[in-house]
Amino acid sequence: MKEINIDVAVIGSGIAGLEASLDVADAGYKVALIEKSPSIGGRMISLSKVFPTLDCASCITTPKMAAVSHHPFINMMTYTEVREIKKNDDGFDLYAIKKPRYINEGECISCKKCEEVCPVYIEDDFEHELSPKKAISIPFTNAVPQLPVLDMNKCIRCGACARICPKDCIDYLQKAEEIHIKAHSVIISTGYDITPMNAKKEYNAISIPNVISPLQMERLLAPHGPYGKVIRPSDGKIPESIAYVQCAGSRDKSIGVPYCSRVCCMYAIKQAMLLSGSLPLADITIYYMDIRTFGKGYEEFYSEARAMGINFVKAKVARITADEKGSPVLRIEHQEEASKPKEIKHDLVVLSQGMIPAVRDFLGLYLEINEYGFVSSRDKTLNPSQTNIDGVFVCGVARGPKDIPDTIADAGSAAVSAVNYIKSIKGKSL
Image (tube, rainbow, N blue to C red):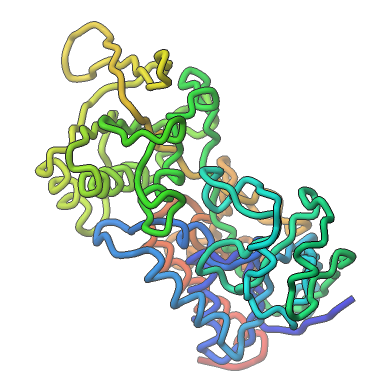
């Protein structure tokens, strides 16, 4: 078993994990950044732009990914999953499995020739199944590291990739590698998932292809997205009418998510503004119960969207069906006027889904979590990153729903707390 000794283990490499790792490493401490996916970057690297500035998400995230990959104090461990965490007298023992890519990572030159000749197409999870990819491929254009992964479950063993590889680095028999990581401190930055598309059965999102998730819309809007433009998944038609259904995955006790996810209003407004730019003739409507614009510049962003002609309708969407052409039909109930329910047809509908914790089982680490599955803070006022276990800190959406600026600030707090903790156990003072 391979053994690694470091100061801080950071679990999860979204924007919170990247920021926390860089802050700890810049303070002179050794970091192991552990990511279960083939590339670092998390959710943010797949977004089109960020609100309220509409800056390019990739332009913010990619430099941090590059900085992490080149930092002398950061051991970047991708495609590696933590299986168990144990606290000991000196800190923590983390037992992880590095999954096989079925390539020799030290020899691969990222030439993509294996991807070019592979005859097998599979669903692309980075593009949220909107387009295919090859059974051996680099996860996405600006992935870090630029190394392909071979899906052995879909591979037909034709040998085309092995024959074309100029470095002879395809290894069909590669095995998983066990790793033992010894750390003084642990930072949990495991991020979030979004509520399932079928959370509200009455929306029929699984059976209507033109009802999509907000992450799918992010990819449609991204300049490096699957199609290069916004089209309907069912038939490739450019939509003339697009609707957003707010609180489609939160503020609902019936689906187990009674809380507000904080970002849904803002990402819907952001996407609507981007759509009005890319599809200037399209009608864009946001059906909402309440608009929550709590951050700096958010209310002005909302006002700007209204001034651009985006329709904001205070109404509940009771159900979604589809007509014979696959266009979603929304049954709505207005909240500000006494009227009968109406049925309104749109070409494309986006469900504004909420945030739920990506990880709930911390593998032997007895962390206190709240009723919704997020990691609890010992002191929310003075030290929000401190968990109930000394030496274990939490940041980002692992602690609760938040936007990108708050996530980055949270990561900095966790990094400072981890550094101070290590100094205290080593007998050093600030």
